[in-house]
Image 1 (cartoon, helix red, strand yellow):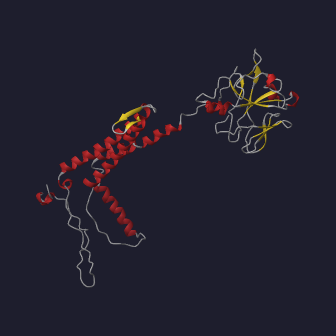
Image 2 (cartoon, one colour; image 1 turned 90 degrees about the horizontal axis):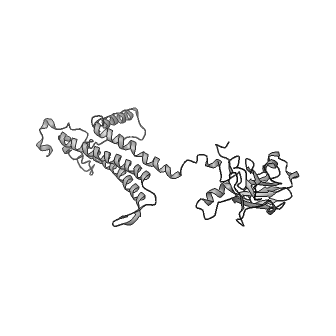
Image 3 (spheres, helix red, strand yellow; image 1 turned 90 degrees about the vertical axis):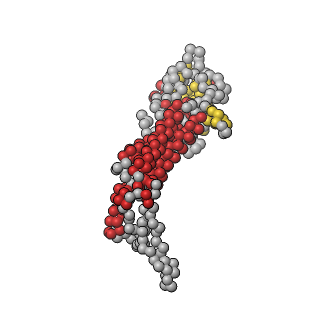
Amino acid sequence: MSSQDIPEENLPAEQDAHGAVGIADEKDPFADPGLPPHEHRIQDIDERAARRSERTVAMLFTVSMLATIGFIASYVAIPHDKAIYVFPIGHINALNFALGLTLGLALFAIGAGAVHWARTLMSDVEIADERHPIEASPEVKAKVMADFKQGAKESALGRRKLIRNTMFGALALFPLSGVMLLRDLGPLPGTKLRHTLWSKGKLLVNMNTNEPLRPSDVAVGSLTFAKPEGLEEKDENFQTEIAKAALMIVRLQPENIKDKQELDWSYQGIVAYSKICTHVGCPISLYEQQTHHVLCPCHQSTFDLSDGARVIFGPAGHALPQLRIGVNSDGYLEALGDFEEPVGPAFWERG
């Protein structure tokens, strides 16, 4: 059906903004030819065709919503290590395939719906406008607002409620895909930062020999590194756990211990402190026998092990946490609980 087959009274009103047509002469050999006559689309002259286009746009927006829901469902339900065979690609990760397919479909459907809406239902009348100075005059501002209102009216957003509602639904659901990706940041830490593998009865195991420690194994002035009983290097979570539970053991003369709590939590002058620096978490490894100071090699934070491991130099913000220790019935050093405070660098929930 063309515009010639439609009665004159059914045709939309023509806009008279096609620009003036110039005539070429000697003074102006490149005259403005003007715009070609406007041809009406089928949707402009047939409401049934317009409604078909409206339903098509709404369908595309609905497909986008379903694809977004599929993205979220895939992210939650499909195991990250599952593989499937897809011809002709071959074996690929099922989760990546599902996420890419649903996310791509959601984006494509929104874009295709917007393009089809613009091409079939919004006004396609070409309007010529004269060039104007860069600065905006009050008249230009008024014209822009008038054009905006006219464009909003011609978009039929208020009249085409089906398109409007499904578009809002698609645009509202789609950002949830990005929110779901935040799950890759990992689960909320909860109270994990406040606890380590140390607990009452855990033996102190020498990091070098992998054997439980007896008090006689720790000489005065020596520095020994220990780990909790049961933690092995082959364990999948070894690095995560040792980063919190690494321990350094030093034996002092009891009369040289200045802090009362440190003395009460020690055993015959053997004190156990976290090896993790409270500045940025570097492992402490340098010990000075005469002063009983330990030094972090990263930023030179220095702690006095004879005085509650308090900070005496450097950027560390607080003392090293101490582990309360004792000896079991077999004569091995054991923990009498976990650290009383979080180990490592300070954080905002430290308490």
